[in-house]
Length: 209
Image (cartoon, rainbow, N blue to C red; front, top):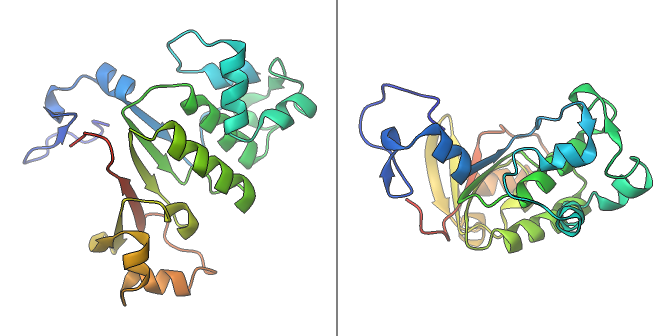
């Protein structure tokens, strides 16, 4: 994201040295969905289309909202796509704000998508459906998921487990759940809140390094 400057060594992204990649190129190739996404005063449609450079049809807009499990609420209780969102999305729940942001990224074509606790406010049913849709839509992309809900990580190609800012172990969900280490401890204590930065899931199916 080029938020840190003056670092030593090399950082490569999309087969290029990070220092040589412009912010504009990063913005085109990387999508970031935080736990508390940016929502502004305006229509629901304008909020979903924010940051989308290509022309989007009504059918594509509806499909993105459906994939983010918010289409029914938009049509039934939020005034349709012309419904007005107040400043900072104060008339929406945390889960609705997150799903609008997820619909937004589903209309884009990034090479790398970072989900930083992006489904933390969702119920288990919606989260499971959206997770399946994300994996289908971005099947050939690289996904980084930062999560403390272990169910989010079940289909990850590679999981890195961090404790005290150090990488303690790595593997897939099955191998880590069977190994006596941090991840197994997290599974056994899954009813307790975890450090939001302890689990980082790296999906490495895309040709990115």
